[in-house]
Amino acid sequence: MALLEVDGISAAYGRVRVLANVSLHVDAGEIVTLIGANGAGKTTTLRAISGLVRLTGGAVRFAGRDLAKRSPDEIVRLGIGHAPEGRRVFARMTVRENLELGAYTRSSRTEFDEDYERVLDVFPRLRERLTQKSGTLSGGEQQMLAIGRALMSRPQLVMLDEPSLGLSPILVQTIFGVIRDIAARGTTVLLIEQNARQALTIADRGYVLELGKIALADTAGNLLASDAVSAAYLGGAHA
Image (cartoon, rainbow, N blue to C red; front, side, top):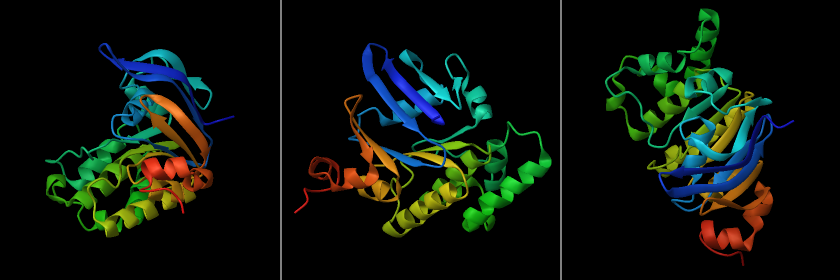
């Protein structure tokens, strides 16, 4: 059984339909990437899974549980973490306070301490800045904090929305290395990324979203080898 099942969902902002009959699944232990042009509906898909956008059709199930009518905080408690586009750290709070906020659903202090150390092991730079106000961090450090905050809820599935956006090439490589590490440690990953080639390089499978609809679905290797995908999203057709 898939860990996450998105079954024919549709969503709209007012009268503007953004998603139309979108279906995808993510199995436990996978890295799955969702690629497409700006405005294709990728972020809305993640927001719909998180309960931040109301569905006008279809269903979302996580670990066999229907997410319909569940609040975003309930969905976090069920095991879905979400690092949104634009980082959205709490600028006036310290790094430690941001991480603690990510664990607001947790009750076990022992488990909190374990995950806190795990996040700081994954992001050693954050350990050096625990008392620093988050708004004074660099863009790369804020992205690390946003991902770390999402991991503090101990999710079975973490959704990452444009984690490399605006970062230097060196930091992009660092972030993608971290995503591999997160998956290797047992957390399933659903990834949105404008750097489609890099995303497909680390993913197991991928979906191409066009104008709110799934246009292609295949293994990451097959999508990388596709002339149509290369021409549209990877900077040119294969020779």
